[in-house]
Image (tube, rainbow, N blue to C red):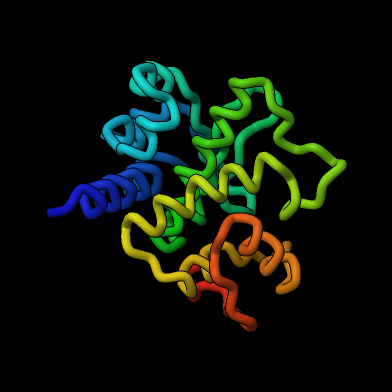
Length: 185
Protein backbone atom coordinates (compact mmCIF):
# COMPACT_ATOMS: atom_id res chain seq x y z
CA UNK A 1 0.00 0.00 0.00
CA UNK A 2 1.41 3.40 -0.97
CA UNK A 3 1.88 6.18 1.57
CA UNK A 4 -0.91 8.21 -0.09
CA UNK A 5 -3.27 5.21 0.09
CA UNK A 6 -2.40 4.84 3.78
CA UNK A 7 -3.15 8.52 4.40
CA UNK A 8 -6.47 8.20 2.57
CA UNK A 9 -7.33 5.20 4.74
CA UNK A 10 -6.54 7.25 7.85
CA UNK A 11 -8.85 10.02 6.58
CA UNK A 12 -11.64 7.44 6.15
CA UNK A 13 -11.03 6.13 9.68
CA UNK A 14 -11.27 9.69 11.01
CA UNK A 15 -14.60 10.14 9.22
CA UNK A 16 -15.91 6.90 10.71
CA UNK A 17 -14.69 7.80 14.20
CA UNK A 18 -16.51 11.14 14.04
CA UNK A 19 -19.73 9.55 12.79
CA UNK A 20 -19.83 6.75 15.36
CA UNK A 21 -18.60 8.59 18.45
CA UNK A 22 -20.42 11.94 18.27
CA UNK A 23 -23.93 13.28 17.84
CA UNK A 24 -24.95 14.98 14.61
CA UNK A 25 -24.81 18.50 16.01
CA UNK A 26 -21.87 18.23 18.36
CA UNK A 27 -18.74 20.25 17.63
CA UNK A 28 -15.68 18.13 18.31
CA UNK A 29 -12.23 19.51 19.09
CA UNK A 30 -8.93 17.78 19.47
CA UNK A 31 -5.35 17.77 18.33
CA UNK A 32 -4.53 17.36 14.66
CA UNK A 33 -2.43 14.20 15.02
CA UNK A 34 -5.13 12.51 17.11
CA UNK A 35 -7.31 12.52 13.99
CA UNK A 36 -4.83 12.65 11.11
CA UNK A 37 -2.29 10.11 12.22
CA UNK A 38 1.02 10.01 10.38
CA UNK A 39 0.48 13.42 8.75
CA UNK A 40 3.70 14.53 10.41
CA UNK A 41 5.45 11.94 8.22
CA UNK A 42 4.16 13.46 4.96
CA UNK A 43 7.08 15.00 3.10
CA UNK A 44 5.02 18.02 1.95
CA UNK A 45 4.09 18.75 5.58
CA UNK A 46 7.65 18.25 6.78
CA UNK A 47 8.85 20.78 4.19
CA UNK A 48 6.41 23.30 5.68
CA UNK A 49 7.40 22.96 9.31
CA UNK A 50 10.85 21.35 9.22
CA UNK A 51 12.18 19.76 12.38
CA UNK A 52 9.23 21.12 14.37
CA UNK A 53 6.59 19.27 12.30
CA UNK A 54 5.57 16.70 14.90
CA UNK A 55 5.44 19.23 17.75
CA UNK A 56 3.43 21.73 15.73
CA UNK A 57 0.90 19.11 14.58
CA UNK A 58 0.63 17.62 18.09
CA UNK A 59 -0.25 21.06 19.45
CA UNK A 60 -2.42 22.18 16.52
CA UNK A 61 -6.10 22.13 17.40
CA UNK A 62 -8.68 20.92 14.92
CA UNK A 63 -12.41 21.50 15.20
CA UNK A 64 -15.06 19.43 13.43
CA UNK A 65 -18.45 21.06 13.01
CA UNK A 66 -21.64 20.58 11.01
CA UNK A 67 -21.68 23.99 9.36
CA UNK A 68 -21.61 24.05 5.57
CA UNK A 69 -18.28 24.36 3.84
CA UNK A 70 -14.99 22.60 3.51
CA UNK A 71 -12.23 23.62 5.91
CA UNK A 72 -10.40 26.77 6.92
CA UNK A 73 -7.99 28.20 9.44
CA UNK A 74 -9.56 30.27 12.19
CA UNK A 75 -8.15 33.78 11.89
CA UNK A 76 -8.25 34.35 15.65
CA UNK A 77 -6.10 31.52 16.97
CA UNK A 78 -4.91 29.56 13.92
CA UNK A 79 -6.71 26.25 14.52
CA UNK A 80 -8.22 24.30 11.62
CA UNK A 81 -12.02 24.11 11.31
CA UNK A 82 -13.36 21.20 9.22
CA UNK A 83 -16.92 20.58 8.12
CA UNK A 84 -17.78 17.03 9.13
CA UNK A 85 -20.09 16.61 6.11
CA UNK A 86 -17.20 17.44 3.78
CA UNK A 87 -14.98 14.98 5.61
CA UNK A 88 -17.63 12.27 5.21
CA UNK A 89 -18.78 12.95 1.65
CA UNK A 90 -15.92 14.78 -0.02
CA UNK A 91 -13.41 13.26 -2.41
CA UNK A 92 -10.54 11.88 -0.32
CA UNK A 93 -7.87 13.28 -2.63
CA UNK A 94 -9.45 16.73 -2.35
CA UNK A 95 -9.57 16.40 1.43
CA UNK A 96 -5.90 15.41 1.50
CA UNK A 97 -4.96 18.42 -0.66
CA UNK A 98 -7.18 20.72 1.41
CA UNK A 99 -5.37 19.59 4.56
CA UNK A 100 -2.04 20.45 2.92
CA UNK A 101 -3.51 23.81 1.82
CA UNK A 102 -4.79 24.62 5.32
CA UNK A 103 -1.49 23.60 6.91
CA UNK A 104 0.13 26.20 4.63
CA UNK A 105 -2.26 28.72 6.16
CA UNK A 106 -1.35 27.50 9.66
CA UNK A 107 2.27 28.25 8.84
CA UNK A 108 1.32 31.67 7.45
CA UNK A 109 -0.71 32.42 10.59
CA UNK A 110 2.23 31.42 12.80
CA UNK A 111 4.42 33.79 10.75
CA UNK A 112 1.98 36.64 11.47
CA UNK A 113 0.58 36.95 7.95
CA UNK A 114 -2.93 38.32 7.39
CA UNK A 115 -4.91 35.35 6.07
CA UNK A 116 -8.08 37.23 5.15
CA UNK A 117 -6.78 40.54 3.80
CA UNK A 118 -9.89 42.31 2.47
CA UNK A 119 -7.79 44.40 0.05
CA UNK A 120 -7.71 41.36 -2.23
CA UNK A 121 -10.27 39.15 -3.86
CA UNK A 122 -9.94 35.51 -2.83
CA UNK A 123 -8.09 34.44 -5.99
CA UNK A 124 -5.67 37.39 -5.78
CA UNK A 125 -4.87 37.16 -2.07
CA UNK A 126 -1.14 36.50 -1.60
CA UNK A 127 -1.70 33.93 1.16
CA UNK A 128 -4.11 31.96 -1.06
CA UNK A 129 -1.80 32.06 -4.06
CA UNK A 130 1.10 30.89 -1.90
CA UNK A 131 -0.94 28.08 -0.29
CA UNK A 132 -2.41 26.92 -3.61
CA UNK A 133 0.98 27.03 -5.30
CA UNK A 134 2.40 24.77 -2.61
CA UNK A 135 -0.62 22.45 -2.66
CA UNK A 136 -0.49 22.09 -6.44
CA UNK A 137 3.09 20.88 -6.21
CA UNK A 138 1.79 18.05 -4.03
CA UNK A 139 -1.14 17.43 -6.40
CA UNK A 140 1.30 16.97 -9.26
CA UNK A 141 3.54 14.76 -7.14
CA UNK A 142 0.64 12.37 -6.47
CA UNK A 143 -0.22 12.28 -10.17
CA UNK A 144 -3.12 14.68 -10.73
CA UNK A 145 -3.47 16.01 -14.28
CA UNK A 146 -3.80 19.72 -15.03
CA UNK A 147 -7.51 19.23 -15.75
CA UNK A 148 -8.06 17.41 -12.44
CA UNK A 149 -6.12 20.16 -10.64
CA UNK A 150 -8.48 22.74 -12.17
CA UNK A 151 -11.42 20.66 -10.94
CA UNK A 152 -9.86 20.70 -7.47
CA UNK A 153 -9.42 24.48 -7.62
CA UNK A 154 -13.01 25.14 -8.74
CA UNK A 155 -15.32 26.18 -5.92
CA UNK A 156 -18.77 27.68 -5.86
CA UNK A 157 -17.46 31.08 -4.71
CA UNK A 158 -15.26 31.70 -7.76
CA UNK A 159 -16.38 32.06 -11.36
CA UNK A 160 -14.51 30.74 -14.43
CA UNK A 161 -12.65 34.03 -14.99
CA UNK A 162 -11.42 33.97 -11.38
CA UNK A 163 -10.53 30.30 -11.69
CA UNK A 164 -8.46 31.09 -14.77
CA UNK A 165 -6.73 33.95 -12.92
CA UNK A 166 -5.92 31.69 -9.95
CA UNK A 167 -4.73 28.85 -12.19
CA UNK A 168 -2.48 31.22 -14.15
CA UNK A 169 -1.07 32.72 -10.94
CA UNK A 170 -0.02 29.31 -9.64
CA UNK A 171 1.19 27.88 -12.95
CA UNK A 172 -1.68 25.53 -13.78
CA UNK A 173 -2.84 25.12 -17.37
CA UNK A 174 -6.45 26.30 -17.46
CA UNK A 175 -9.04 24.82 -19.81
CA UNK A 176 -12.31 26.68 -20.32
CA UNK A 177 -15.46 25.14 -18.80
CA UNK A 178 -13.73 23.11 -16.14
CA UNK A 179 -16.56 21.37 -14.28
CA UNK A 180 -16.59 21.19 -10.52
CA UNK A 181 -15.30 17.82 -9.36
CA UNK A 182 -18.30 15.46 -9.03
CA UNK A 183 -17.28 14.32 -5.55
CA UNK A 184 -17.22 17.82 -4.06
CA UNK A 185 -20.43 18.36 -2.07
